[in-house]
Length: 395
Ligand SMILES: Cc1cc2nc3c(=O)[nH]c(=O)nc-3n(C[C@H](O)[C@H](O)[C@H](O)COP(=O)(O)OP(=O)(O)OC[C@H]3O[C@@H](n4cnc5c(N)ncnc54)[C@H](O)[C@@H]3O)c2cc1C
Image (cartoon, rainbow, N blue to C red):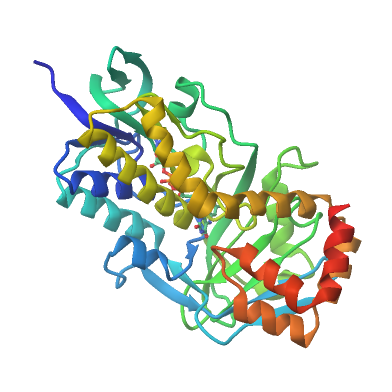
């Protein structure tokens, strides 16, 4: 009889590999179909994460961590700056290729079957199971199909899930010959520089001589993203940091924002970028993808144990998500709505307001790249004058 997997995962990115490892570790058969010929390449990511990711995925940090970040310098459109942090390690810069490869290794160690150069083409429910069509492998059956196939997820489209609310376009580069403070990332905000989002310079070594730079823009901008990137390289605020640099490698990609209202259907689940489980304020999706991967895999395991893949059963995944991280991402989307409405003068004005010792102390103490809403509530509590600003912005 033709083999039927317990679980098929589409996409061998960090989320897909992490979910595969968790399910395969319980002894179930898991196959990953990945359209590319290599895991982790090409890299389309700035590689900035919080240290807590390593608590989640328990991989060897040695070949992965490139640099430690203690703070950020935020530049307004008129180049007013605020410097936050500096006290402790707030973020890590990682080698994304090595990170993705470490995660797939763990999945393979647990018995996951990996099929490279195998693209998911289509799929449908066939009685109690899912039958999919894969470019090279052909037809394949599974009880549970997990779409971890990134921002343009074909699984999402095939099974008529809702689309993310927004897609950002990102473009960047790996550079060398810089002279940066290795412990600080530089963030540049402004509608001429990076409309609807921000630009970044992230030092990738502890001597500040190499970096990852880039920016993201919202949809429907006046010019394409590469116009803003070229401008970023020679703009009067950023050029100071980017004189005489050598560009080694251009990166780019799409970031989906606005998590779907529903990540599950009968015999199908979506996870990671495929479900837009991304932090709306920063565009970071590695931590949220792994956290959601934890919830997705735990419910997948329960579903296999109980041989129950109904919509009703898989709903538990969404409930776990909502209880643990969903509210944070919803708050992030609210913050984003306000942010998108600000013009450059308003951004300058508010950044100037933040140039206050007490406020900067609070940001440095409570700032958390994974849970920014915690900082917002501390700021509002400890500095009531900000409440006035917030109320004005919400109007
Ligand atoms: C410019 C840029 C900078 C970023 N910087 C950061 C950052 O600093 N920190 C951070 O946390 N996040 C960052 N992100 C976001 C981060 O890269 C994603 O959130 C993360 O990669 C999501 O992981 P994933 O496994 O869900 O999806 P992906 O990494 O997209 O993996 C999906 C996999 O599915 C495969 N696939 C797609 N379609 C098919 C198909 N039909 N059949 C088979 N396989 C398929 C793809 O080839 C891919 O390997 C950045 C993104 C961009 C674009």
